[in-house]
Length: 388
Image (cartoon, rainbow, N blue to C red):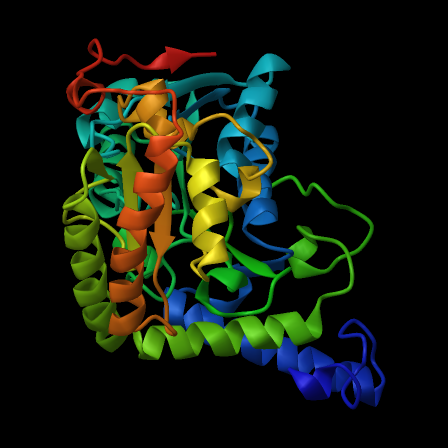
């Protein structure tokens, strides 16, 4: 990235030498990203990150296709960048929104997606894997079901979007295999720079831009491109993709060792699917303690964790994802997400396993709460899709 901050600093929309050099660099990055997505280069739109990519995919598609229909389908565990935007549009009367439930593992049922489709359904948005509990969704199966619906009804709708911010570098993000029309990525999730992302948008797809005032990025995202960030994103994605299988094998072994150690502690429960989960994710709930307190004590020991999504870290409410799996409010409050990465070692995992009993014992000794394991085993009433 360094040369593009000073020596190759041109605006890629300019026609002088420096501008053309930057333009070629952006095109090269676009081509490299497209190769990993198995898409065309002109289907790769650079954005400021996953949130903007999600917003363009959702609002841009809904507004460009409003004459066809206003029904949208999503799930109860989506990232706030998807769920809050859709709920806002629903409250404004721009869409009729169906929010599908998930099972106790945070998995959405393909058949429930099929049943929810109507003649007015214009868009379906389901994340590739959940950022909090790590559950991997059956996106390819859902994509095939959508294709079957289109064929049976002789239509190009509904369009299909997936938020794949959490899966680049961990799972295959080939858009043809996933059968998606739109896909969102965020560079920071695969060791790229913060503040840059990608929206894959299938060629020929009508999208109404949210930011206007220039012709950049196929006219979908006005403004001078972040050239250093784009270069960093493409390089980081290539590195993550090349190392994916080897790194996944290493991380899965560490993840499972961590989960096994944590579940030996009293009143502990794994959140998310036991096997269909991201290689680097371990989300565990502990009864009788507050997640925020655990974060502070773990941080003092050099262990960095979170209670939910980093984008909602200022909220003291329990994770909407954990609650959607049917866990009680009290149990959800004691949920901690441990995320492993390139720097994580076996020694790190053993250190966490060693420190957790001490911290839990201390926090439980001063906690006024004494819950039994029923808070983990309670099964909520049969979940239904919610309509907004």
